Length: 415
Ligand SMILES: Cc1cc2nc3c(=O)[nH]c(=O)nc-3n(C[C@H](O)[C@H](O)[C@H](O)COP(=O)(O)OP(=O)(O)OC[C@H]3O[C@@H](n4cnc5c(N)ncnc54)[C@H](O)[C@@H]3O)c2cc1C
Ligand code: SF4
Ligand code: SF4
Image (cartoon, rainbow, N blue to C red; front, side, top):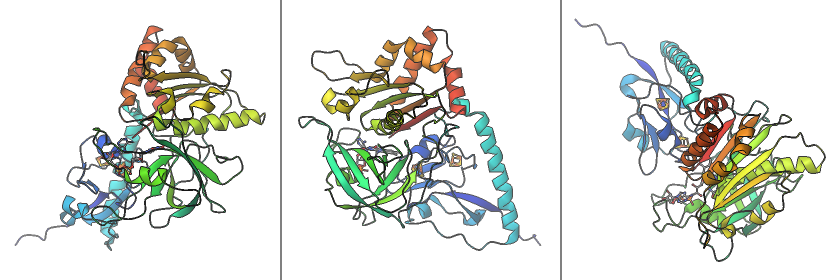
């Protein structure tokens, strides 16, 4: 007679469909292609996932970090997960399964340690600068959002421009909603999608400093581009961005978050910040610049240089162009790049980085933190320009990049 087959327990990696913003970051990150998606859900293939944890830190919402102990035979299939509107509860499990689960956790943590050692190969830091302030995250969720009131909404880009970018101020009144420069919030658009399901969260970077858009007020600003074309140039009406850009003063908005634990600014005296952005990628740069500007205005400046490379099609399409020009060069070393100005050659941020040459590499030699933000793909040209600039003065960019990644000094956020 055959012995009864023993049950193998696994810790199955699952994604919370209620919080996931479908940003594709985890799918791009997973080294073994265990993550896939359909038109609605991002899911993990239990047969492939080896719990290496590479996808955990890059996920902007934390929705990736969920696990269910299940018998291997009864693991949730991809089809099961595609059908989820929320995570299934953890089933009751026997004690021996818990022991197996603990062993897998230890194995996964071991894999994570290995990853940290190998972080030089990662393009972006997964840890915050050592002197960053403590961020609060996930205080509010899709199921338990906070209501903010629109305190202002105006167009930043010129009326004759194709790009409609708005500056939107949200007020939280007496409710606890602390944010740091570099964090994001989740906006919950009202209504349902084409399948009759509630819309998922849309993420927006906070464009104001920790003290509030208006110093001392419990409010924050967003920089939102109205999406009227998809990435392929096809006409589309983006749900979240159009909802936000159409809001009127006094309207209520449901918010989740804050999110983000690593794209944070350094606070130690003398730390330099090198910012490279395009379009709405300027939001976190505005927040960091404004925090330092206010410290300076209050006589509390801790020194350290600010350098900004900012690209847009035309000056009229560059958010915050007017206020930026008023900042003194002694406070911020600014390099603007325009790619569609009549009669002028097309210039991109990477061209300006190359032109700036020594002033960039001198900064890289010091206590400097790099922040890149904008459309997906922009980091390729930026990395090449940094490599070339370093190579021209005998600096080894790949080695420096790896060091900066490990030290929480190289941060990329593209969408
Ligand atoms: C961490 C993080 C921070 C972000 N910060 C900001 C920010 O500060 N300001 C901001 O405006 N956006 C920001 N975004 C992007 C934002 O979350 C939304 O993706 C964007 O507003 C489009 O959402 P939507 O609901 O309008 O479009 P959807 O209805 O979700 O999409 C409609 C179509 O447009 C395409 N699409 C999505 N985004 C864009 C885009 N940016 N350009 C062109 N096509 C697009 C989609 O692929 C889809 O085909 C951020 C995203 C992340 C992950
Ligand atoms: S834990 Fe590792 S293998 Fe599993 S989905 Fe995440 S990146 Fe892929
Ligand atoms: S929010 Fe997290 S789980 Fe969802 S697609 Fe983005 S990285 Fe993946």
